[in-house]
Image (cartoon, rainbow, N blue to C red; front, side, top):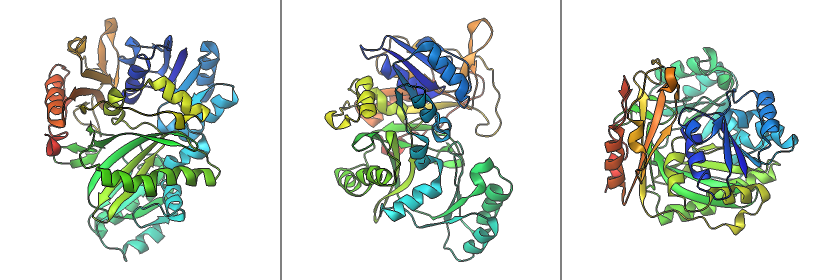
Length: 423
């Protein structure tokens, strides 16, 4: 079969790497792809929000399945457009993708259906938000309602910082229209864990747990990013935590969306906080996480195509997901200056070091082709170097070893991904 993947980051590179292992896959296409994806799939340059162009490409290629990776086109309704055009699509409808597209919607859904999460209030104008901040206990969390590339969340330790945050989000529009509404949320403490799940509208099947590192600097310091590295599985995701979440969070979310007339088919990413009072939902994503996908899919033993088709056809209950017993660690190699200003177009060397090496992966996130088909940097997060090992400590050791195989000017990465739990 022929499959078209929408997106051009490390998540999509990881998805395509898993897809081509399936004996049913004849050809993979990607819009827009990147330099790494181009080694595995035929890429077509187009913006992921150019729905007309994507539809034209799809009609030209006649794929048997289209997989939508990024959040923006899902929230914008690309799935609906392609479904209406007659294609088989993996990815939630616009009505369902609001689970990620609006934090206010997600919080209200959890409140209505008694899904455990932090206390919160939603504001449509800054003056009401300023008044509310006079009455809260600090720290608090400010969240731009809409999509903001994983960066629209501010943790504020005092009222001055919180007021500055409201101004930045709602008045200065640092995150654009995403800041038209604001969620002010209780600050929760505990371990963060991510759980990705396949959903077919009614049934849900959990993937292995993972833990992301959002801050730019070691020790979780500095600005929030799209993710500087991750590991899987999380030792903090215990059987007790799993039992609680299955009872009160996972299926409850799927059922709530269906009751709201927003049947969800695709991936739900559950961002959890393991508080002293039990697990709470930090956030939902309506797609594979990035870079969580880079440590989860390499451990998936199932044929990914079979699982995706079961989701599309409402047969997910028939599938038993299996993951390998080893661990995975992904270290993101970024350009110095990310997530603010950074240089692009820097030549990358050492990528051939991964060829033929078992248990090592180099997923391209921000790369493109330069002169004479050289591969150059084209983003803040450039590569996701992933390694498998018999435990987290071994996987971490191998991932950092592999991170040194690759070279480009101004290469930057955190040195502590998974360090606090290595074994």
